[in-house]
Length: 50
Image 1 (cartoon, rainbow, N blue to C red):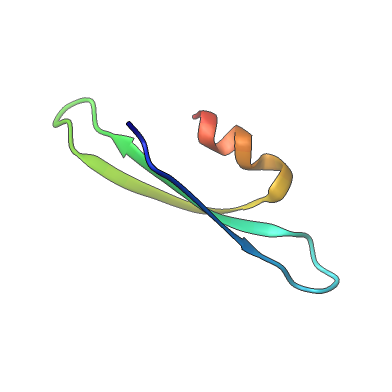
Image 2 (image 1 turned 45 degrees about the horizontal axis):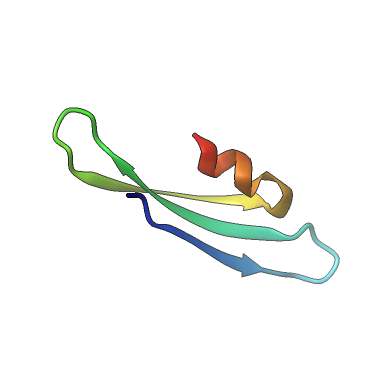
């Protein structure tokens, strides 16, 4: 079960970006690692599908 966190960062005059943190399970060890990235609001679903 992956945990998802989305924090919105807004700045006037700039594109709305969000910081997305996704827990990814390693196929070798079974341990979870966290993948963190700044993405545009409209690309969040695409990032979380990977």
